[in-house]
Image (cartoon, rainbow, N blue to C red; front, side, top):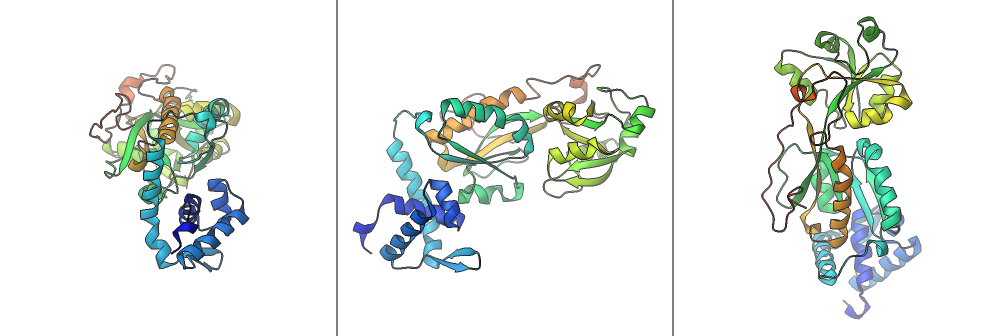
Length: 348
C-alpha cells in the first residue's frame, strides 16, 4: 500500500460510497461532481490494490475488503472530526453540511417551514433532507449513517449507543368532511365531541406507516370495551386528511396538523369521545454525534422549533372541551442523565 497516495478526501469518498453505493448520490452527499467521485474511487483502488466495488446490475456491491473497512473507517473519521473541531466555536453561517432527518409529514407541515426560514438566515450553506420514517429500521439507519437523526414515537428505551431527547407530545383529534352526512344528521357541530357509539360505528381511515391494522387509539377503545371500524390504512397524515375530505370516513390526526390543513381541505375538527394518552415524540441520533458541534447545533434548533407544538405545555383547546379530563400524557422511556445535559432535553 502506497501511503503517500492516500489523503483524507479519498477516505471521505469511500465512507460515502459504502453508505450510498451510487457515485451520483455520493457526489451530492459530499459536494463533489460524479466524475470527481469516480476519479477518487480509481485512486483508492490503486492505493488499496483492490476493486472495492463491483457492479451488479444497477448496484455497486462492495468487496469483502471494502465491507471490512466500513465501520472502522466511519469511527476513524468521526474521531478525526471531533479532534479537529476541538473547542473551536462553530459558525453555522460557514457550514455546508448535509443533514438527513427521518420523519413523517407531521414534521413537513409543522417543522420544515420554520426550520428552512431559520437556516436561510443563519446557515444558508446547510442542506437538509427529510426521509420517510421506518421505525423498524431506525437502529440500522443510524448505525449506517444513512440518516443523521429521526423524530419518532418514544415507545421504548433505545439501545445504549443511541441518544435521544424528548421533542413534544402530540394530541390526537378527530377530523371529518364538512359534508359528513351522519354527523350532520346527529347534530354534531364542529369542535364538539362525537358520541362514542357513533364514533365506533362510522368507518375510519387509519394512519399506519408500518402497515398495522390497529394502534394506540384501538388499545384505548378496547379498555372500555369498544372497537372502531377501520376500512382503510394509509402511511401518512396527509393521506388521512385528503381521504376524509372527500369521503364519509373519520380520521385521527395530531391536533396541530389538523388545525394547519383543516381550512384548505374543508375539514371539521372534533373532540375524541374517550380518554387517549398524548403521544410522546423524541429526537433520536447516534451517540457518536452527541459531541459534534454542527450536529448539536442542528438538534438544538429542531427541538426549539418543536417545543411550541408540545400539547402538554401548549395545548390547543376545543370549544366546550375539557381536555385535561380527556387526555393524559403517555409514559415515555426513561433515560439516565448524562454529563452536561439540559433539564428540558436530558440527552442533548
